[in-house]
Length: 130
Image 1 (cartoon, rainbow, N blue to C red):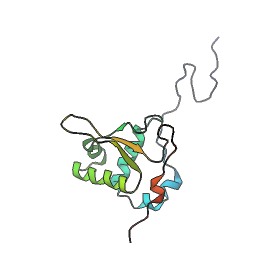
Image 2: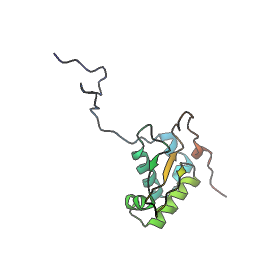
Image 3: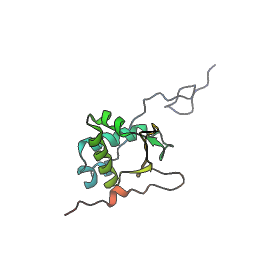
């Protein structure tokens, strides 16, 4: 006789039944800081959220070339999109990558917990320049 799983979303081996998903909160995407982002920057942010697994904030790896491939743009444009995400407060850089050592930059999502500290939500403080 097989045991029934405790939770409905887990099979008897403890694996999830449903596909993982990327969550974007409504209060965030309705905020002016999100609305003023370039669509390419939004695509890159969604890719960063996709790489976040719940415990790896500050260790999310994404290079400018990878971002360019996701956003279907050049690497200089991808860098501008990443800088816009930093300026608007959605992400921060944890460690800068170097092309010579083939090491990608690692990123922090400001709306998620980082280690034992809560989210900083810097995007909520951003206002457009007049």
